[in-house]
Length: 267
Image (cartoon, rainbow, N blue to C red; front, side, top):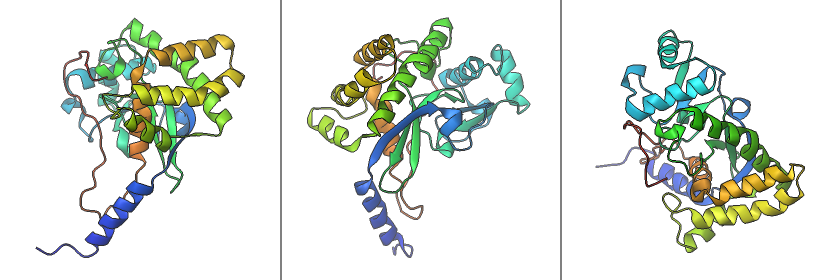
């Protein structure tokens, strides 16, 4: 069976772009400030576009938790009503250049890593690892502890990390990924080496930044407890390997998790 015209060239171009992609962490900022098309009443989530009634289990709970955290509604009933009236908008991460882990929840004030492909200039965004607690928004859990953890990331971890990244003029991720592979990471369930290598890149800027000493100590302690910290960077880096639409096997990777809220051994 003959291939469609131009398919072979498109596939070669896809492979070239994948091989030459040069992802660099250039910033940390609230989603509303950097994510294309983000709106204050929007909650992004993993997976394909769905009608609200098609979201179930942990993912549905996570979306509602993200809306409540953002102050868009007081409770789940309020979220349901406002989504049904279009006052809260639920949208897929990939329509806005984001990649989400598990439920992949992005309310507008959530801090995100900004990863730019230096080879083509395109950008991708991923939010922060929520820490070692099994109670996390991206698992479909939202309570006072999760709210406090998200506040801590927004107010301490993300600003301190962002200060360091900007002081360094960006952190190239491809060399860290290469070295992490050689140390046994596969950048999904195994991220310890990559997280340590990334931390080593940040330390000089953290120690010399304008951030308060306590914030620097808190950020290093948080990363030390979070072997999966680098996972969100590797996801954004992979998201930026843009390929032509005419290539034969091109599908953006996204995470769907329509399961009941529970802890996972894989993150």
